[in-house]
Length: 369
Image 1 (tube, helix red, strand yellow):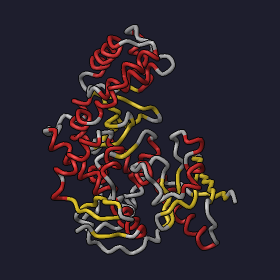
Image 2: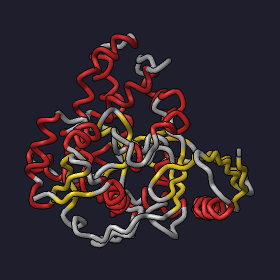
Image 3: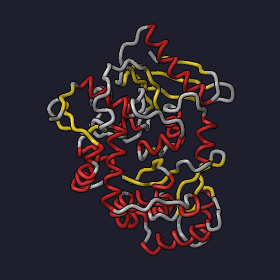
Image 4: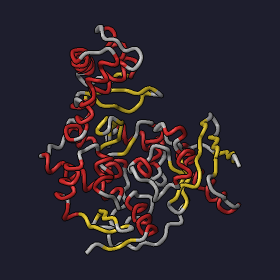
């Protein structure tokens, strides 16, 4: 019989699943362990992705996280929804084959809009595969120059589309930046050890990782996050059934990782500074548990998919923040979305101070109200 949870209990469990509170069964200590816990972490903005990891690895610096990515503990590619994520290096290929290829369904239409043909896209894959062979690693600019030299147009969004296509096809992946420049490498060479899974096994593993990293969640949330059909999402959840438990939140059946189903559900009082593109919000379609609909416009101005970095208190978004990194300090501008007294503001500054420590810079704070 599913256990009934209040919204507060569900929020406490979700914060635990997201590794934003102590977890009863795991304490990830490496980048590899955090990324494997989630299965995939949205990371189209690199700075945001680095802090998503840092926020879950207390005491680690941005240099520590970057070094882990250089060690190939995780890599970036387009495994689902046409969006860049961090994924475990050894799992990138089966994830691309399971969910990444679904974004190819609209590729022909997009190519037509851009004035590209399927032959152009396949030629780009061949050209990049040859240029990167033998352990090569090229910056984005070098990749685009290589494509142009082969007679392929890269103006406008053409270059982005061709780079995306080569990665979704499983030929390239996004390697760590060199300085501020994005780089690409061959997936087979950057991650030579790849797990091979049967389809049902892959569905079950992805379902379990999503639930344990986000639960309580519904089958529709899993379908939305993964880009799978609802039928496949339900198939994966059914296959992962032994590792999951079912609860009810306001009468709605939801899944949680069995390891946290009976964990203490003390109300969260944490104050956190999270990046905009974090699984905390991006991992869900229904965000009302964490975000007041009245604050949606402040978090996603213009509803354009660009999320602002958030200040979270007791599991709820209470403000947004922006940072300007200088040579000697990081200046953080904070816009409260709820009333914060002097003590609460001090806790917000302390949370943002952890971000400044992650960068290895002193923090300066500017409150907008």
